[in-house]
Length: 358
Ligand code: SF4
Image (tube, rainbow, N blue to C red; front, side):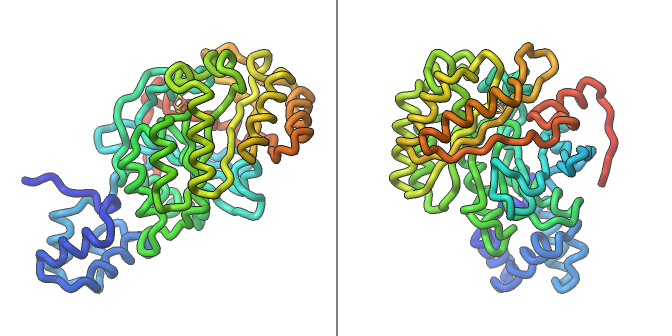
């Protein structure tokens, strides 16, 4: 039997094409999509305004769920973390973050942070996701379905997406773009492109490609060092795409899109938190008119780095302010549920426990 297609990776015009082959009118596609995204149907059987034979054909052709929720964890600050299992039993993490200063404006209510790969090849030194390398890319449906399930499990409206979970989003470019089309489409999850932030370690050719996409996505570059020497200590990718090339790609993005971009900067004690780095970062961000999100390091089990004192973080931020650069100093959310990407998954794999929540 032919393998089924995940319906959450299918674009409206493709569904219309499939229904046309079955001699069904185009409005049926809108009915199906309304069931999937608006009414959040859990099976084709539920789609009660469709003829029974069509429901059967849909069930034979398409899969409705690409991920399965294994467990959720609540932090005291209402951040919620989800562990999803994929059909091959791989695990990915997704986080629901209410009103997130530093990522979005404070009036924004619910942000979902999605994963794009199982594991990660980039081995940033502060991150648990890169500890065991990359296993595979997520499909478009697996990306969409994280948001879909968070919405269904919590009953919350999702109004922002940050593509900052496990994996390097731009290393899974085609699946990511397809997923973002579904998340953005009025027939899909209807999340405005301007409310979607794509984060990258700095894959230069892909940043340029992203600049030429019609969607007005926000770009966030994980900088974490304002000189090659410091950045290389933290992010091995800097050897392949050094700062000069990365910043030229950022220039291209900002000028092509005419949009502000963001630099993410994790402050690590005695590694990248010197005032000299702050001066350099201030210069870079000012020239690109970029905003800077300062994120105090979240300790990872097995890694030796430390979070700087709060005063040190504030001094660093003050230097940015002197350059006229807009910045936020994040109050870390979800520290008590291991919100640093990859930690819940690693712990789960160690414990090998399975607690289904749906
Ligand atoms: S921070 Fe992102 S890109 Fe770097 S290792 Fe972790 S998941 Fe990969």
